[in-house]
Length: 191
Image 1 (tube, helix red, strand yellow):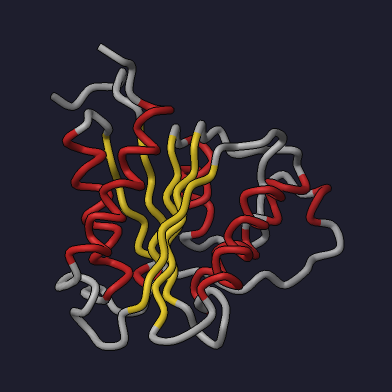
Image 2 (cartoon, rainbow, N blue to C red; image 1 turned 180 degrees about the vertical axis):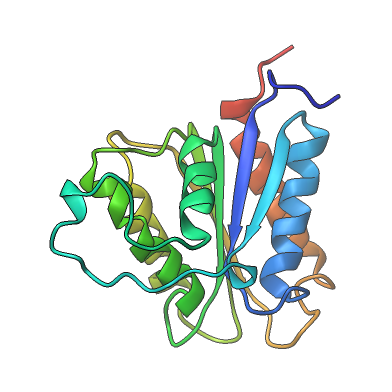
């Protein structure tokens, strides 16, 4: 069943590896959310054509962003979602450049008083060694700056030091499914 009454979850995946560890955990979470009755879609930031924010001084006065690239459609989907999943590998103790690029381009809706509609946000971070806390903190700051209220935010993070490690780790996959269960409490009516 896939109809408009189902909660819509949008996952923003900012890993340059389409089959990487971050993607594996997002897949486990979205599979569970779908099974629980949500409509899920994925925005692969690395597959989009998004220009870096150029800090136009008149951003708040513009009716649309100065750039005609893929960012507007992606941002629209994110801001309209009932549930939001933000996922990034850890690069140099923080979010990936792709996630930072996406977050920076959300300055346009911020200057226009547009806020996330999400009832709940899930965060996923995967590191080879360190930086999980800093990465999750950056994602939480994005949620706080993009919201006009406190949005329940849950997270899962873990270490995966080589390609395929997250997919092969039953505890990490279980944690991603548990994250989905926590998100579903806000999205799926109790029957």
